[in-house]
Image 1 (cartoon, rainbow, N blue to C red):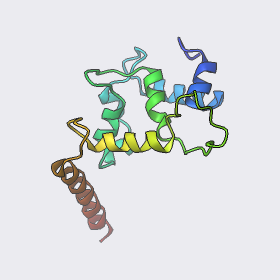
Image 2 (image 1 turned 90 degrees about the vertical axis):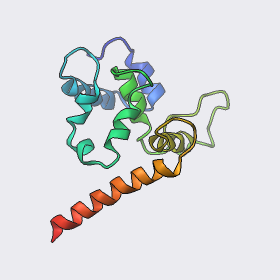
Image 3 (image 1 turned 180 degrees about the horizontal axis):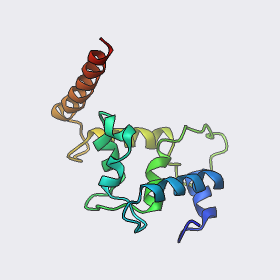
Image 4 (image 1 turned 60 degrees about the vertical axis):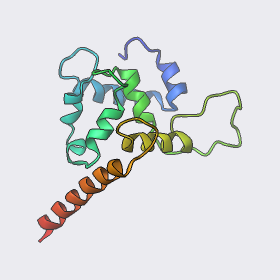
Length: 147
């Protein structure tokens, strides 16, 4: 059973189905090695796909608000919502409703924040080079394994 947050609220807020929330909660609890209802950076680092991703550390950091070292299920869902496909619902958009987390604007802001390491609202040359170097190293390694 998913604790503390009514599932109906999560279905509306994160635009996911009840069965998707149940699957994500199951994944969340399987990652929660401390069994305390939160995930640490170490819990995320055990995910093989993040371990090999050149931006893995930055993606992991996106789950944690500044100064926090644990994320609960709601925070986990909030970050994952950015990865959902964009839904083209501009025609029926309620002007008083907040923009969904998986909107084009919020996805761009999320991606920008992955590169803005010092959180100064700018991507410096050094920050961009760090990412390009990581990607380049990963590509070179995978090419070497092919030969």
